[in-house]
Amino acid sequence: MSNVMCQTWKVVVITPEIPFCGETEQIKRVIGSGVFRLHLRHPKADEQTLRHIIEGLTADERKKIVLHDFYNLVDEYNLGGKHLNGRHPEYTSVCTSRSCHSLDEVAASTDMEYCFLSPIFDSISKSGYASNFSNDDLLKAKEDGIINENVIALGGITVDKISQVRDYGFGGVAILGSAWKDGIAQLDIIKQMME
Image 1 (cartoon, rainbow, N blue to C red):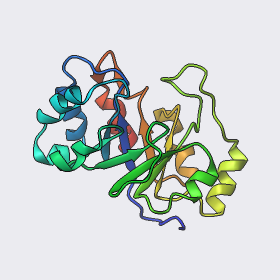
Image 2: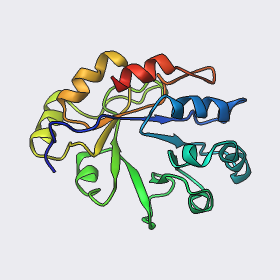
Image 3: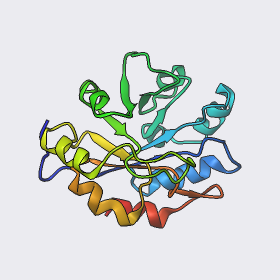
């Protein structure tokens, strides 16, 4: 797929791995800021913890939520979708997105609404998780149509790197490390990413 000149820039926010006090209210603030999706990602949490968070959201807010685990909750609560990842690589119906760590994986993910490619830059939230791609790799992938409006850049995304991400042809960014500080959503940073 080639880049569309007037594509919609997507900002996806991923929750920290560990649930935190007041999380539902922070999620409401993030969704209210106008993000494309919020990925509720708590790999070690139990189903009841996720239910508690989801039940505090309105029906419209729930449509913005994508789950990385406990896919049964997607239909039950009419959520935005399921995300395939290393813990759950199997394909199931109504998958919205997937995590990719190579350009080959991206090329094979055409059946997804969008996919993450990471790490584009050195990770903020994962120590020692360094970029996998050179500048030339990413520009060539754009030229070849592998990176397009359905590919979301993840890993080390900060406001000062947005123009570079756009130059690579990505359709948006996914943020984790720069989106949260001590359980508080950094709305000013999130909004800058959307501009």
